[in-house]
Image 1 (cartoon, rainbow over the protein chains, first blue to last red):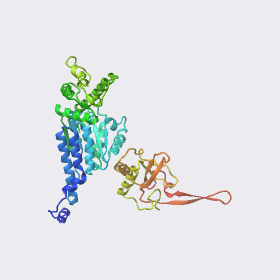
Image 2: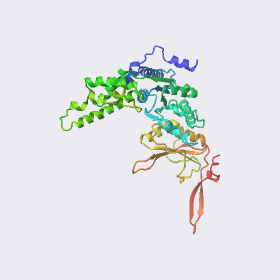
Image 3: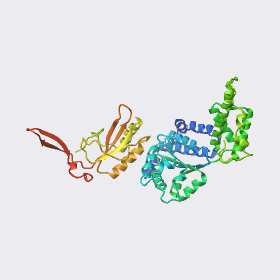
Length: 311
Length: 139
């Protein structure tokens, strides 16, 4: 009798499994619900996170039943345009993995090429290793990972960094989770020139751009968090703003919305300031008026296109 | 003769799991951990060679264990110790220090006597290992 058969024989096949209890204990649904509430749109992303959470939870139950539970490889790649929430999701991911006991500490170390690649021979390995050590027990988030590999310069130290990353990703899979992030086309380029990297990453998650309605929801949520609100006029003005802004260059999804809100707050503060001695109520302090939005350069765009990012 | 230096040295050698638990304690206190090695086990030899720089800002013991294992691989016949440095004001000193690797064969120490003025005798200890030059001890 093989050892695996022995283990199977130890527990009867109809041994009940306390699924509800395990779900309750991990508090994973709290985080998943929070994710649903606080992140607008991003349905493919949420589905994948739910699947990963489910797998980890089932693995834990299987382990209790003495079934083999090989920890899955959870290195991920997030692709998408700027401002689609890659960093935010990485933070959440770390929390979820921590709750499910896949990573021990649940912190996120966010780095770019500068933090990994050295400037002279022999500088790269210690630098990359130090970052890896700091990320252990948590999630290493490499933003714009494709800059690690520069094909036009064959003596670039980026390749050395990639090699060390690969080694640790493979050998210390239960010590850290690596998430690479960047634009989709450049990431694909990066993977095609680094097949080792591609095959070690199990989850390729694409972050879609937000629709106008989703951006409006995001704006409203940001406003609520900042204790501001739109009135009927300004809500409509902001809807128009979003539609115009989306047509323009350098549009960065939720990030552009956040910048727009910051500019609106400036104009709002200035408008109240200039009213001088007049009576200002609490409502004035929290309400963004249509005038604050329509003063944006975006509305004058049709006359003279701007080269810089207009918020 | 078994070298007894630092914490836990009268106990059997720590397993990796026990080392990890000790490191986790040090990290929880906010101390910077450091791996050092030497082949001169004299008790007054305070300054051991450093294996890389002290590891600041770490959250998890796995990174330090990785360095320990690398140091053991490079110097399998040296003494390797882990120290935890407390930088908080008033302490500014190592708070933990324990051996994580020792040579398979430890020759121990000999007592050296020196004739002084009059019939005075001065005593000191000397490790038999240091008869040979640095790097080829414990070969």
